[in-house]
Amino acid sequence: MRKETPVDDWLNHVGIFSLLADDEISLIRKHFKLIDIPAGEILFREGDEGKELFIVKSGKVAITIGLSDGKQRELREFSKGDFFGEMSIFENAPRSATCVAKERSGLYSLHVNDFFEIMERSPETSIKIMYRMSNATTERFQHTSEFLSDLVRWGEKARKRAITDELTGVYNRHFLEHTLEDLFKSSKDKKTPFCLIMVDLDFFREINKQYGHETGDRVILAVVEVFKKNLKEKDIIARYGGDEFCVVMPQTGPKEAENTSWKICREVEGLDVLKGKGGSMEKITTSQGIASYPESARDLKTLRQKADQALYRSKEAGRNRVSV
Image (cartoon, rainbow, N blue to C red):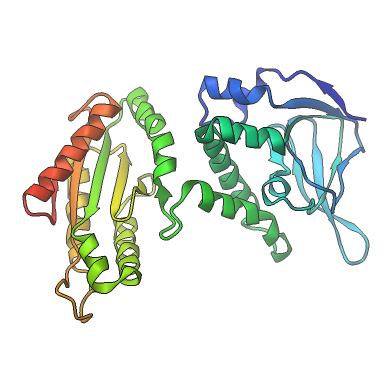
């Protein structure tokens, strides 16, 4: 039998909530229940309706699936800090496996209705949770065999719906708007440099007008590949709009950011996506503006303003250039 008890402050230390501020933790804590599961008890069976997400506070539980010979195969053991059960909730699908307590276990339980209430009240909080959750889900199963492939389906779909741009696969504006402050604060706390780059594709509306939106999409995809090629792993690129991008470069000073931006600028100019298509434009170019912490500004609001101002200087100076 399940036994429910109040939730304590241990949620503060759970990995999937690591991006949350204290007030966001307080918001979600009241939606969780702490339940006690005796050793050997089945929490849910394969095929059951899935309405709860679980986080292990103590003990161990195992996830198993039924094989064609009638036996159960253990897929994974979950212990302190691990979560499970999310895919059935977000795909509104039956449980894909059976869960049994290997020893007496304490589990936090979050009902799907409560999670959707969190989404309505604080979309940015739910996005941060889903981001950390989808990363962990994908990493959890990336090296397993084919019969597990369906188990990561929600993780991939949720990542794309919540935090990435559908066309390019890079982060979207919604994600960056809700994480930029945390990224900037981290740099300030660690006393490391931080650069913000605003990017516009030059005359993109004219490209769509002359060549059509399908070619415009190919231009966007080609430009994104140039960014990916030249940015470091810790850098972040987000698509802000049709032809607008924002690049975050933690632990990077203004000179290095400028060198990278100029390299991107020249490589984009060399793309041949428009060549031979009969329009008046054969080159793709970008205008870029860079602001850096602590050189340009010491707070995020001013840093963003400075990056925008630098971007417009690039446009006013003739485009296809970088301004700092």
